Length: 136
Image (cartoon, rainbow, N blue to C red; front, top):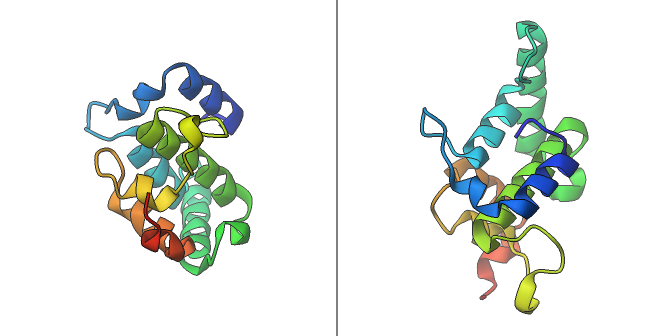
């Protein structure tokens, strides 16, 4: 999950079902991505103050976001990863367009249960409030 978006896309293209594999603590890749985003932690980094500052900044950016266009920097990159993980979990597919003419709706994917943390659903509803009213 801590890989660049391009690497994550390649991995999920080959094995989209990997998004459902949980670690020893029971955390899904989606859950881990969200935790790393809000904590500001980077695997291999040992600067606790820097991680705390990054986490605080990320949480603030998430709190004030009105849409995906208002996301910047590391938050934008993490949300791109979370979006890919949601696509793999919901459609078992990460490329555009989706198969069979299906439309991508992040709120629908996040609310489908399974491996998506409720915080991700809350954030999806925050930045995409109209998707909750759209029927599949």
